[in-house]
Image 1 (tube, rainbow, N blue to C red):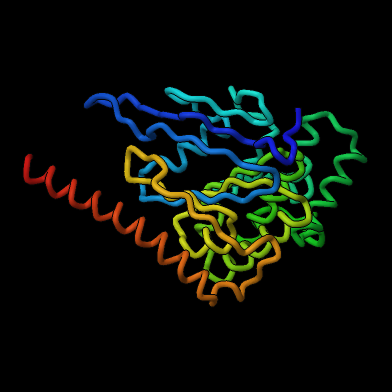
Image 2 (tube, rainbow, N blue to C red):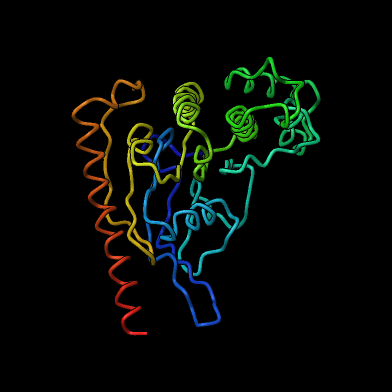
Amino acid sequence: MIATATEPILRVDGLCKQFTTKTGPLTVLSPTSFEMQQSELVSIVGPSGCGKSTLLHIVGGLTSPTAGQVFLDGHEVMEAGADRGMVFQAYTLFPWLTVHKNVQFGPRLRRMSKAERTKIADHFLNVVGLYGFKDHYPKQLSGGMRQRVAIARALANNPRILLMDEPFGALDAQTRAIMQELLLSVRKSERTTTLFITHDIDEAVFLSDRVFVMTARPGKFKAEIRVPFGQDRAADICSSPEFFRLRSQIYELLHAEGKAVVDAEIAAGHDA
């Protein structure tokens, strides 16, 4: 079953996550629920340690929730699968494979013919602008180019949703801006649905249809901010009054959470 225009492609229902530590149970994610529609780009921002990455890993099937469920196209997610493409801050490319063979890796696992997987790899390397580097190895590429390969490799599996955990966090400012514009272009051409984790407020506003702001640990959604710029946005929106208004709104929400964390740490220190 594939989600229709009115049915969510992703539904997260009451997710919680608790870890066992030497000092007792540690709750990192409080009950969290949300939905995403086809081709949406949704960002999650929040204080460090609030459970953003944990939430993404549960959706990706890499971590099991303590409570709650994740549904993709109406089917419960129980483990990792090719229907969720993951891109991390670390490039996670195979250094012994060329760019072209890295992108072919998923289709090859699915036992596609050489002609089919070559066609897929060619297409997505063209999408990310790296076809001319297909015979290079990862060590021969810049950081931004490696991340483009990682995105192409994830897309080559034809995932229903792309899960991105601070994918541009290690890049310099100029390369990061280029990668943001690339992601918008890929989204438009491929109708990719993307759940995006970031610490960068400007990045969240520039890329997203919606931004969820999380509380400090144990994390839960504090606010949902709708971004009205549409899919044809360009860099000039970053100087618009509406961009600054949204940026300020999210900043104030995060600042309040950060202050609460500091106040709690000071209080704990006085009680010790």
